Length: 77
Image (cartoon, rainbow, N blue to C red; front, side, top):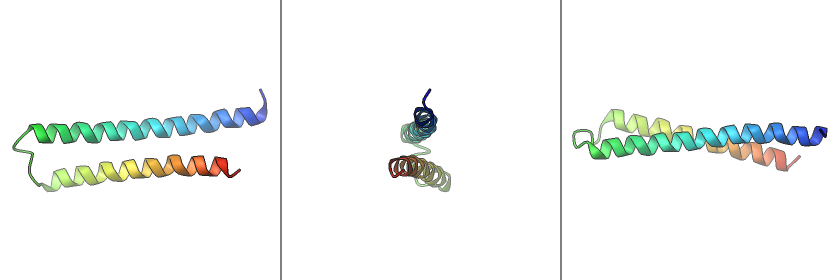
């Protein structure tokens, strides 16, 4: 296999893995939000709820930036 093509396949595998992690984090975030909305005792401001939201949002942003940086670095090469 062509070495350039081989590099692209390795790079695409990295991006695919990062996108999969991003989708899983988004799914988890929405599932937790659904559980909290369905439970009136949890559906109020709490430090735990806010911490979970912040952690998941931070994780999604971090993953999105990873994907973007990989794409930008590959395109600029």
